[in-house]
Image 1 (cartoon, rainbow, N blue to C red):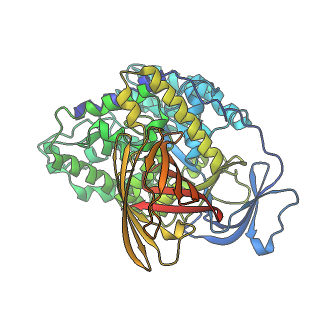
Image 2: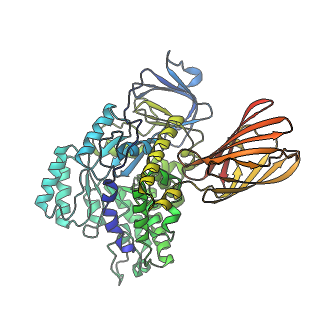
Image 3: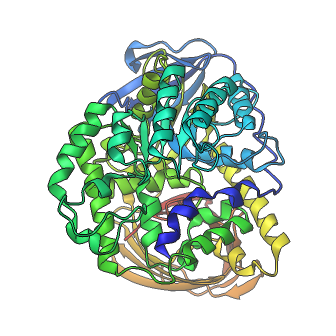
Length: 623
């Protein structure tokens, strides 16, 4: 039930005790020597909302060394040149609410997989919100270049009512965590006001930031008075918006539903947002998490998400159990919708007041996969009412300013700026137009190391393969989960002509796809200068050779053989065809790849015939 969510959010042990074979590559991070130059690239610096066109950005020794117009810049001799014409260079993303797996980042642990999922999604910095001593070691190894992964800032073990039961214990815990080398403290459930006050006072004295939950025993006003550096989940805001004369007491749950919703006084919100800004308190709202918590969708629907292939079968099973526990006796739909509406209004009000926001979806839980969840949270910010720039700012410049302010250090990342750490994403499309463009990567740079999209794709394929192995090892109980890890192409797809290659003049295309298990049926409407044509086809993705009847554009029938199968990683398919017309033979390979957010489908066709080889590229967007 919904009221169980607070306890569910406390417990990530099921995820942190999983042990499967980890990624066998990319765990080590040999440094790249020499300069690297992005040439003729459009820079989206995120210092403000703008694009600098036609720039050359030079990176030396892991730092941005030079930014200037390409026609006025000489690329250093021997530098690795990365062509950026038509592409966009922006800062790497920071995920500010992460739960790192236990492990040393070796090839046989889940931590290596988690690192690769972050990097493949452009996440180059993370804030770990439940830390252990091994995470301090991971932080240092990544910083030294011994491991390839995002830069790490880590909290210590959570401060709870059952491990810091009084002010004296709280003071000892804060001092111990500071000595252990953690970057920040995390407050959690069950703290008395006196214990919370002792934590805040000791943290201020020791010079270690305090972040985390705001529970009913503490309340929003105490957290603001203590200048808690960040509040997670928008804790406390809805309770603080309950009318003073309400006959119903505010619920202590993070999910605020029931009769109290009728007594929410929205006129309180501007003052609360202004007080947050004045206190210098930041917020990490985790919008997506609570949308998943209160939704009507069954676990099976979320298990079809493309990113489910990148986590172990046991974790998918635990996600499903988490979600199923909320479906037993849910509050009325109108109440849940009102709850989400209020959370969105809090987010927008905080932004309007100048209170700083952070992106951190709280992965891995509730179907939020490392890296992929970061992108879903960015989309949730936009759906709540922010612009793409305002949303992405919460994952780039804002986190960098957060760490600089509260750790009393110069800002290291977050903008494309000379002197900063070279954490960058090269995109095929402008992120200021849509946060979905963040998935259209040409590559990622982390601390000056360049990872082209081909290498990022290999990382994902490796992680997917490892987790198919974990699924197979769990069979037959997890057969359904294994099949659900593969993507679903079902829907109507419209041709994106601006991102396609080899199109005949005046051509357009709409494709309708139905998928059941391993069978894909499709109906394609081709629109050309000669008129419209509808073509139907189907594939069975079992890798077996079958006969089919190919047709030319003029209606001539031929003879053909075809094999169709899932591509490595489960996020695409590959179809190989040999078609013969009289004495002419044409061989065609079609490769479908679905984007991580499920909104873009790329089809590449390699055709070998009498006139040589031709490669056609089609990009479709889901309607």
